[in-house]
Structure formats: C-alpha cells, structure tokens
Length: 358
Image 1: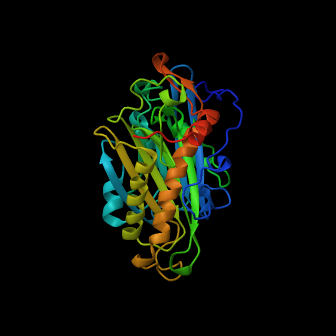
Image 2: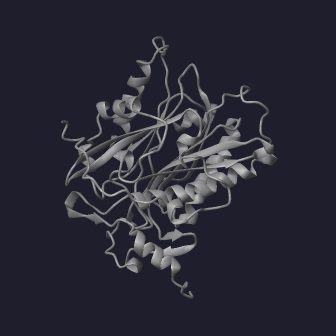
Image 3: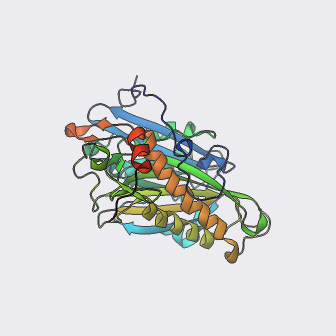
C-alpha cells in the first residue's frame, strides 16, 4: 500500500447539519443535499495521509465531459486574493471552463495543475490540443500537515479524477480538506444544494467548499468558539489573518458567464454568515459553473429572476461550511498541533441555551 494514502482510522458516522435541524433558509435541498444533485456533476477525493506529519489531499469536481472542445460557461469571484487560484485570468476573460476544478494544498497546487493538464491531454479527442487552461484552487493545510513536503503527486490527482462519481459526497477530513480547519475547529470539505425556480423553471444549485478560514463560528446567528464549548483552541488556526476558503458552485440553470459570476459573488458573501473574518492573509474565492452550454438549455434566465438562485447559493454555502465542521473530528498533526472537532452534543446544548446579551 502507498504509505501516503493509508486509510484514516474508522470513526463513527457523524450527522450533517440537516440531520440536526440546522437548516439555512426556506428553499428545499436536492435529494443528496450535495453538489452532485446537479445533473452531470461528479466528485472525487484522494486523501494523502502519513500520520502524524502529513494530512493532505486533492478533491476533483468534474462537470460531465468538460474539455477544450466542450467548454462550459463559468465565472469567478475573489473576496480576498491572498491565495493561488490557478487559471483565473483566462476563465474571467473568456467566461469558459475547459477542465474539472481541482482543490488541494497550497504548495501542491502547481504540481496538481501540471497533473491535471497531463490527464486532460490523454482524454479522447484531445490528441491535437495545444493550449489548455487548468483551474486549481488551494488552501494552506500547514497547521496540521508538513506542507513543505508537497505530498500530493500526479497519481493522487489522477486517482481523484478517475474516481469521481455521482451520489453522496464524503465530507470533513477527506481529499483537499484532510488537513484544513476553520473558525478554530477542524473542518474540511463540505457540500450542500438547493432547488430553486427562477422565472418559474425548476433548477438545482449545488456547492462544495474547502473550508480553512479564520474568524468566529456563527451557527444560525449564534457565536461559538472552542472555549465556549469547553474545548482547547488550536492556537493560531482560527486567527482572523490566516486561512482561506475555495467554493465551487454548479447549476443546471441556463446562465451565461456574467450571471455565473454573480452567483460566485454570493458564494463568497455567504461566508460572512458563518463568521468568516476575510483577513489580510485569507484567500476567499468562488468558481461558479453552468452544466448547460449556452443556447442548449431552454430560455435564458433574466437577471431580474436570479433572486431564488442567489438565495440558494447563500443558504447552501452556509450549510456546506457547517457540514464540513460537523463531519470532521479532532486531529493532531505536524509538530503535535491539534484542531478540535466540533462536538455535536455541546453544539446543540449551546444553541438551546438562552443567548447572552452583548
């Protein structure tokens, strides 16, 4: 067995936000409450783990047969740009996505982009391709993982891409979320979806978040810290000036690149609901893609009718971040540093208690 991909210890299944009655907004979720509720969207993870020093990985969001000959409309938004989101300039200029969107660790992002290019060039129909724009986002997992070892290799990238599937999406300490933490707690990958009817037509919007940002956790408006839940904080891990979050938004609504950029903005705005600080050192990004090429999905959605999709993105991101926290468990990593998992029982007790006056 590859020692870098040794399986994590078995942990009991943890509830998602919706299981606990923690639901953002009034719109219904899709059947899986995941980005894979959007038809054609697949997700794959490779978890790269060598305890105690390495807790990293890669996550692939694969929208169908996307490629240089079958690009999809897409938009991108930067809330705070202290990060590496590879491929943004062409995506913003042309409004098209040519590859899956990959997420990983900061210092592994460039190797992952190279591996994605190689994987795409080997795809059917790409034998004559001479230009390709890979899109790769990253979060810094150096608090828990030996980030300088750059443990993510081409084989891990290809495994995530080849293993991408529909259905339920693994959350928490998996793939690109293996070593990440947010708001003072262990976090990771989280996902959610909403079904909306802009202009009367029913469409799905799904999100996947790689959560690794600073601030103070808010759950449905209630501020919570590790200390308030009786836990030791991972010193520095939740600091306002550190961390990042990369969000992938997908929808089957027939939107153009400009409209998808408007959805991407709402995804970054939604982090404020969860307590994000948007500090100097934070890289807060969203990539929004449409699975329906222009002119093939029926009548276009008018700008004035985008409200339900905006609401869906805001609610789904809030829930996805909470799912990323609930799915993760306490982790001790590089240098003996520890991030506590969010304890469900203490969380529910705190939410049931009367709010303190401020």
